[in-house]
Image 1 (cartoon, rainbow, N blue to C red):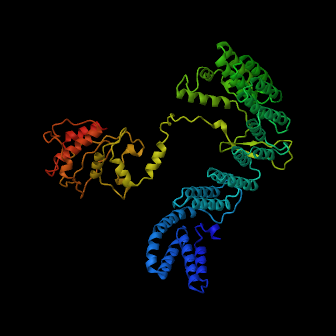
Image 2 (cartoon, one colour; image 1 turned 60 degrees about the vertical axis):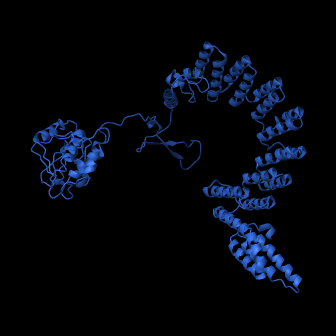
Image 3 (tube, rainbow, N blue to C red; image 1 turned 120 degrees about the vertical axis):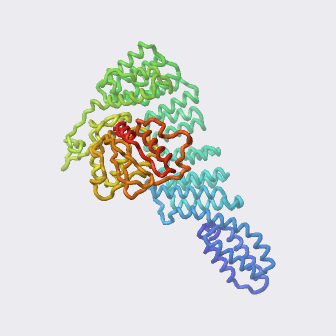
Length: 629
């Protein structure tokens, strides 16, 4: 039992029970007692290097066991196994983090794509990666055994996940255990019989080790009777036969596969490409493409592949003939890509007259089709851009390309006709129930009104004055104290004002908290026009820093606030001292700018802070009110 599950992180009780069982065995003589003690010691030494939940308890029991047998011998054995136990305990703590992420009650069901399943898948992936790193640095055989146990454990929950099976088999193959890898693949096909990719991986492994017949049998089982075989299975078997048995075997199977009802144009393209690239037989490839054209003339992708093949041959005459034949048969809604390929061909191999002629023919052919928008707005610069661009080089700027892309979108949707009925919320209701269908209630699907859609342009400017009413509503709901504070702030347009200036305004303001009528809200601020201030009457406004009750002059649109019983907040002299003490503020002319006025006012207060008072003349007050009105 321990050989199978002894490496599990929860196997601690099994180890302890096994040790208890060995200790309980009867010993009739000294030899049997010695054998029993030796067996117990070996199990202990295996258990203490196995990272389990009970590793610490087992280590303590082992120390007690050795000390009970012989203290002198115990000292050497314990010092020998101490590093191994420490390493196992560290690995256990790290491994426990990965085990805690796993839901051990999860059922092995096919994946449905829900988030919980993806989380569990990632948790198992992380645990497997951790175990492959051999964190305990044990020998290769023990490490491989632990990895195999973890893979088997993960398959109990990830049984229907093909990538887990593939990783398991690949890990065996990389380690040289080909037979073990084959057994894993065989088990995976029993678990997932419909997994085509696992069959290809299994056949690839057999082919890589030279077992050609075993690989061929896998392909034949995949194909079955050929009726239910997929197109991809036919193509991969043709390639396998070409690699292993040669040209004739691949050609013979292609002739049989083309008769299958599941054969599509992909089989023709694959075999023609194989004949051209591997067999170096362009004639055979050309014949295959011609044979397929009779069946798949209405397949635009097949025509494009045929045109690419002829381009490799530099056969421009047959390319033009192919485009003419296909465009005459294809309906307009399927011919868009073929027209683009035709125009690109003429841009590479033709002259200017042929280019313009093909572009004009495309416009005429797609004039009634919704797949091309050039007919809606007439000629466009896109034709010119396509004509003179090369790879990732464009004859215009990235902004021009974005503009052309928006034009193309508008052109494709400008004449789109939809059956709609107007709805109050701007949506439209489409009744897409067929009239011939017998149903008690019509199926009604609500769609957005695409006629209201506009191209997003981040350069659009908002409508001026749209937020005035909203500002008025916000101003009405603003607390009086906050309005009083805002009324003391200067009108700013542009950069943010100096922080020191704002702080000086705060220090000079008395914010009222009760009546809104005492807040002194300017008329212009109440009307929402904060950019214009009402001029204040110039009067004798003086102030004393030593605690006077007189009002102070402020910037435009700001009311004069009384400062009863509230002295100015003084700063330290070192912070408010000017760099140049020889220059006085009184010798400078009064400024006209609001910011400079505040700086001027700050300088005046700082220059007189040591004297205890300062007075502002009527001339400065008048200049202040007149310059900021």
